[in-house]
Length: 378
Image (cartoon, rainbow, N blue to C red; front, top):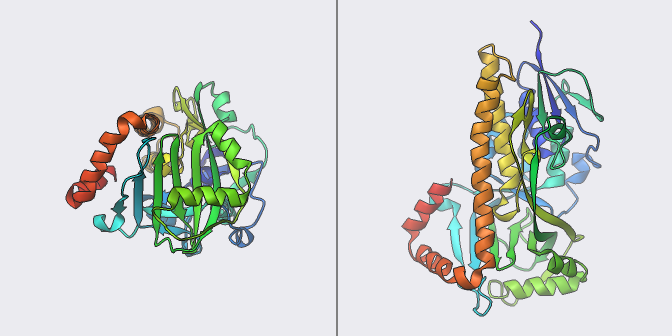
């Protein structure tokens, strides 16, 4: 009996994770990626970058089990033990005292691990199992299942004639790495401004953090044109109440990219299934994008595994494609709505800031209520 075949189109982090997972199954796997990582993992791991993402703890065990995470990656990430929120969205009022959400309150070591993206992609690429067929250009061979992991401008999505809806939210982000004179103590600090959050996220060095600075596109583009000393001073002014009499130095190039939302009208058609940024694009608030993509891969992998175990087609509509679409469309919609609503509330800080400050004040004074809220968000 012939093996069923799967095409994974796209060798970004999500597509590579899917390829690692599928390599454990009795299927033929082909991965297409025209632009492999420029550096090997052994070289990339020594390059400091501000482009990072927090991968939630609940995904790590699965990534380890499929060979997509190991001790080498552990050593290059930073665990996030505390999420600190500072509300500062009211234009004529000073920021309020921070509220800390601690993973230890849930008996967890960390909420997640801040992971340098280029390093992690190089790791995944260099550790691909040898029996995966890797191509650098489109392959028109027949496949039982085609997985679109080829980004927001997905060619496979176009091939399936699935419509994508883009929403340019008029915001952009700056990312870069900084050195600071205090130790981060595995605390991620987010200041909620009316034009978007500014976040410091720990890196593996206790005196370094990555920065995600979001705001209106015109303001962000203007900020990008400032020199590193000016940006250090702006950043220090934002965080001076949290880290008084300390210093900040920008260590890396400052990268700027536009932010948008994207959703699709359906998640599969025929034997093509959409995942990751071929299926959804989110604002980086809350670090949900990559985690949502990993969730896509895990659910699809489990459904494919069950289909193989019961002798079904891996592109069976009722056993694979439809259950995937039902589960993931709900998850995508919840994340999209929650992030968009949070941004809208921040933008209307003069109206919504006071009740949000009241809620944070109640949570600060009530550890039990805060624990209940964190448990509900797991």
